[in-house]
Length: 479
Ligand code: NAD
Image (cartoon, rainbow, N blue to C red):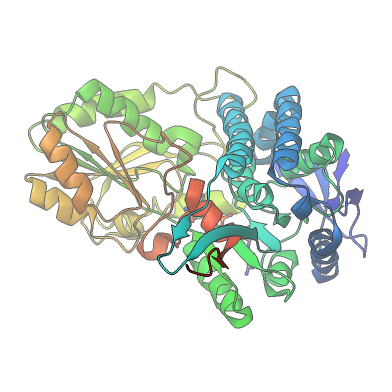
């Protein structure tokens, strides 16, 4: 059984105390790898390596072009190892292999995009009437800690790590304890690509009272970028406040998906299925609240139910599988399935789906749940949609915005004015019109309310991972 260690200072190492944790494949329910289990000592060792690499190593000093070349070399190696990377996420969380491959492609894009974005960024100049000239510089901040969740292990990790690196910072990344392997492979590839020691460190372990909390508490850390649950985000935010360092939080969601009478129904059904059944709904952006206008409600639900039931379920390693029969872990299965009990349904009815075999929940659609039912209010993070009928645009907006979250929303309509009007009024960091999941990496990404603090992507990542400095020069003594 393969062992995956921490990557610290350019070497793969076991934990200082030798501790390990089993890595379970949720589809087979068997251990498939052994992982180093990090403690505070391992986290501190990784931060010290990153600190040394930032303070005295070549990475922040080599310039954008050199870093860009090394990052593209890493991206090339990721493409060569795409099968291994994809299979790691599939074994770790039972993600269908075709979706895992899609994530690898997106991860490679994260590496190339942020390398190029940093290289091509410009700064501002401010010509002054007083005979001076001011300009800005984007300077790296130091050591960035990236903490990522298990639902898109490689893709979300690279989304956070790569802009930090491209801007000249050094990084300690703690992937989720359930999905540690692809991060280790990536860091091995970074060594092969020629990244200097200490630039990209990976530490494994749990969150509270483990490697995760130790990383956030270390006073030598300059930035924390976190993706995960809203509750964890609040804990990390409080720790960061004590050390007075900026934190970027990408948190939970309960996305509204609004289908108007005038929508292209085939397109809306296609995306409504993707929005909640892709990755078995274990997606922060999931369209878990479906609002359908009354004129097409019955027809839409019938087609949507048929499409959900037609998804091919099978071994996640099989390229024909569209929907995994297993959720990411036993613990997560227990959480998701608990929402199918009468208490959480609040009077709602499961019209298709329900608990499957093993640690699985089938594609599930609930109708008739009142607006205050737990299935409507809380993030389930599984393949469970709650469908609700509405009459007017104003009612749809009121229902969609009745949430403590605000990560994303979808609108399906062929009416251009309505599309813009509704997009403007939705409380969300991203609104998709007649589509879902499409991203431009330059656009702001993040949430409002309990869905997060701050934005990442393009210039937004730059602002988080750099300190802008103003330089004012006297260029003329006057006449
Ligand atoms: P989680 O908060 O339990 O864990 C996320 C990461 O934080 C893991 O690596 C974990 O070990 C670590 N962690 C936990 N407690 C910690 C602590 N006290 N200190 C430091 N680290 C700690 O989240 P999860 O269950 O892995 O992920 C699912 C959640 O992530 C969902 O709520 C989902 O919506 C959210 N998510 C958000 C986005 C987004 O972009 N907004 C994307 C994906 C997932």
